[in-house]
Length: 458
Image 1 (tube, rainbow, N blue to C red):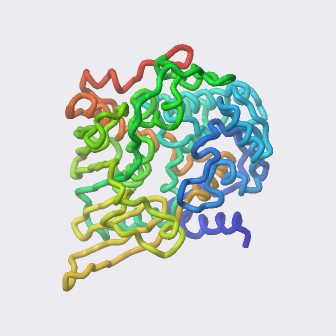
Image 2: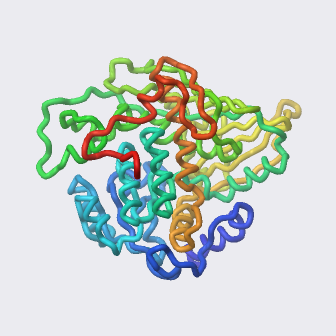
């Protein structure tokens, strides 16, 4: 059985039946493309997940270009990046056209869908512009840089009837659907505490270089986009933007949102009543980084406490590796950097993201672990992409629809706002998801730099 056929078969027989996953059908897209036609995709943002392999995980097809080209109903037609070297290399690799300006890609009516793999601060604006141009969107996580612009992404998707899938792949994994069913069937008992961990060695120590000339042919102003004007710095461009408020909120937003989204889905919760976060930049206070390296966020639901615990100087914690993700192996849970713990009245469930599986522990016997249920996992990269492609054709909401991604990303935004306000406890409107505290408004909606503005009316 070909790999593509296997993926479709496995989705139908495992995840599809239990979780209502959209399968390929004879429906047509809003643009009139038949279900068996090829989908023309443009990649916007050719670094990171766009074209570079996930470091250390050994997957041959885990970039967006190679991953989507695994499917025989896809054409990658454009690679768009402000950095010409990256864009041209990606175009050559994918046998597509290089285009530095996103607007020209969006004006091409032959493009059906856009992969938004630009830096975090461009995700919302890029996705909204694409949906306004009639394109479906696969946007990298996090969904947004602020809560308000996440709301606008949801509004745009509904207004223009666009498919918008967020790259939180765990929602397309059969093992996670099985874990959710286990919980929903009451086998774990009522869950009252959920703990999410993001404990890694991700942050760099850096000083921002100044006085550097802008490289020839590179539009630094366009790269800054919605962020405030500042001098060009290769330090920022070289991925240190992750740790500056104008561009991201550190590794919890940029990467930890994966397990936050999975935990929220498993726990079956939406908008918390309150949220607060404390922490600091303790390990390397002399760095120009602005985001914390230690933080603890707490969210209050009606009968559940949900926490996120992060450390970013802990090299002895480890991210789930390829041997675990691709084999019948469980992580060493105590030092798993990206684990989730769900404490039910009957047992404790440990879950790994992107593979790693899950195990349920009840009271030990003779001081030995007592595992009463378990399932191995696999990294659902291809399944998540397949779900997006299928939904382009059926027009059904994808597994990680933008509204789901926005809700999960908002949990990080609440924590960021609370932290920046000195640990202020936020009261959240459980209907709209907007913090009620007047001081929170300055961070819920960012200041935009013209012309890179998300409008009130999308």
